[in-house]
Every structure is written in structure tokens, then in C-alpha cells.
Amino acid sequence: MQIGVVGKPSSGKSTFFGAATMVNVTIANYPFTTIEPNKGTGFVRVDCIDKEFDVQCNPRHGYCKNGTRFVPVELVDVAGLVPGAHLGKGKGNAFLDDLRQADVLIHVVDASGSTNEKGEPVAAGSHDPIKDVEFLEREIDLWFFGIIEKNWAKISRTPVAGKNALVSLLAQTLSGIVGSEKNVELALQKTGLIEKKLVDWTEDEKMSFATSLREISKPIVIAANKIDISTAKENLKKMQEKFPDKAIIACSGFAELALKKAAKEGFVEYEAGAKEFKKLKELNEKQEKLLGMINEKVLTEFESTGVQDVLDKTVFDALGYIAVFPAGSKKLADSEGNVLPDCILMPKESTALDFAFKLHTDMGNGFIRAIDVKKKMMVGKDHPLQNRDAIEIVFKKP
Image (tube, rainbow, N blue to C red; front, side, top):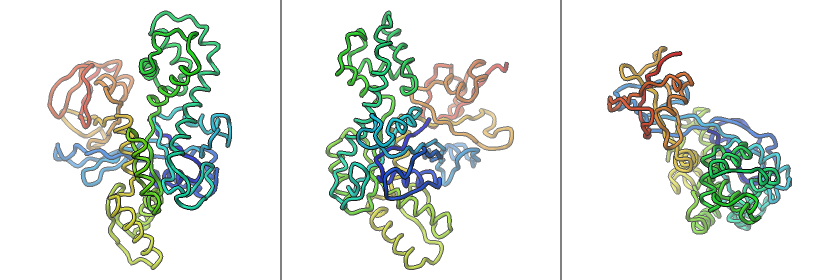
């Protein structure tokens, strides 16, 4: 799974990315600070199952604190997109191509309205962030449409017999961006085009298909950033009223990054997603002022910086992923003594067999049965998995 972080220049996108991953990136208040995509690891929260087995887990990847498992996810931060990106403006085509492998997108919006559509500084509140939401989705839709158009002459002349052949042809042609045949089939059903011959599609129908395919294959969560600036609160309300069906989450990448840096230096005790921090050392006047502002304008007002909430809702709500723990029915530790060492994020509707293949190809190919360790019950390959399941795979070794 890969999460793409997108937005116009100077929206606070790289600050958000740095806050989520603690990767050192160039942060500056001018367009195209980011040129090459940055990649890093963020974490999503899962209620750990160790307490249900009365053990203390020992993760190999990520970490666990106070019963909360922080599971790693990959983030990629691409350069800022401007209107006309699908036509190559601001190197838009190259930047959009960096999103091909992303399963879901976080759109970082300057909710304060202090940067215009090009990412240039303007008076706070003078730019409407609703326009940013609309333009970016339109640009990505047109990017999808452009890829379809580029291949249309070829695919529209290719004879197809039946729905399955149509889905397969489109999925193969668009394999670099759509993720799976299922996404293509859902988009065809949503637009009512699954029964229509490709040669008869109109331009409007192709655009409708591109939009539906983008919504399904790359859902977008909106991070309403810079919530620490006074004009952002009213704009947040306007965005939520304008787009009631979209996930719009108030956040401050600046506040999260500041708190994590302070915690790293030992000045405060702070955990990602927390609604408070604890001072551990005496602070100078500047530090006191900064942390006081964060506490008053962000943590007290919104109960967190929102960055962790964005990540959690992106993975578990927008994508619908579940967390599954590999475990043994007789022992919970691996051969090196690590207790419940792994927590695997799986797509919704995953089965025991899907989980086996995720762990290792040999487990999938040699699958015999699975065991629900919590219920101490054997299950078959088609058994649907649930969030926080503990599963053992019994397989024939090659």
C-alpha cells in the first residue's frame, strides 16, 4: 500500500509529510520547493491484541505503546500541482506520474486561504480553499482521461466478447494507475457503460468513466491544513458544508512537526495523535510561546494536531483496510522470541488464503487450513478476515 501526499505548492504539504514521517525534507514558502518525490514511513494506529493474550508484544516493524500498535505505511510526497498540471504546467505530467502506484491520496489544502492557486503568498483568508479541492480533483480526473484518450484509438478497435473481456482490456491498458480489474469493473458499473461498446462511447462518457475510476482507484482524503491560523476555522466549516460526502479533517502539520521535534530533543513527552503533551525540561521564552500557541490554538481547540487522524482515516476509512496479526495457536512468539512480531494491513474482504499469500507465496500455494487463534477455531481458505484477527496458517512446505 502506498499513500500519495498531494496539493498545490506552499499548502504545507511537505510540512505535513515531514510531520507524518519525520523525514527531513526541504520546507519553504515558495512554489516547487519539492521537485523529486520524497518517500517515507508514517504509522497508523491499531488497538493491539497483546492485552487479550496477557502478553507484551515485541514488534519487528513499527512499535507499540500503551496498548496501541503503530503500524508502518509508505507515504510519497510529490511536487505541488497547479491548474493545468495534466497539460504539463509546472511539470505537472511528471509529478502526476509519481502518483501511479498510490492506492489513496491525501490532499493537503491550505485551509487558512493564505496562498493563491499558484501557491503564492496572499493575505490570510483572501483565497477560497474550496477552489483548491475542486481544481486538484479535476486535474487528476483529466490526467486519467488523458491516459484513456492516448490509448483510445487502439483499444476502441480491439474486439471484445462480453463484460469480462471489456474489463480485462481496460484494466490491462490502464494497469499503471487503476490497481485492479475490480476497480475497472466497479467504474463501468457506476457509469452504466459496462454494456456499451467502446467504439460508441462519447467524450462525456469517457470523462465520466475517468472520474469514476479515479474515485474508486485513488480515493482522496482532505487534510485541512494550517488550522493554527485564525482564518482556517471558518474555511473548514465552509468546506465541510460544500463537500458533505468528503472526508475533511482539520490538521496542523506545523504543530505536529514542532511537537515531535520537541519530543525528540527531550523537551516534552508527546505521542502522535495525543491531545496533550507534558513538559520535561525548562523552556526558553520562544519555546514557551510556541508550545503555548500550539496548545491553545490546536490541541485545546481540535483535541489533536489532526495529522495522525488523517493517516488513520485514510487507511481504515477511505481504503477500508483491516489489521491482521500472524499468530500461532500454541505460541505467540516467532523463532527469535518476538511476541506478536507482525501486524499486517489487508484490504477489506480479504480471506484466509489472501492472508497466506501476503505472508509468503509458499504459504498460499501450500495452504491447508487456517486457525482463528482467538476463537481457537479452524477455518477454510475462503474465511473472511476481520479487523484485529489473530490467524495461524497451516500449510504444506514445498
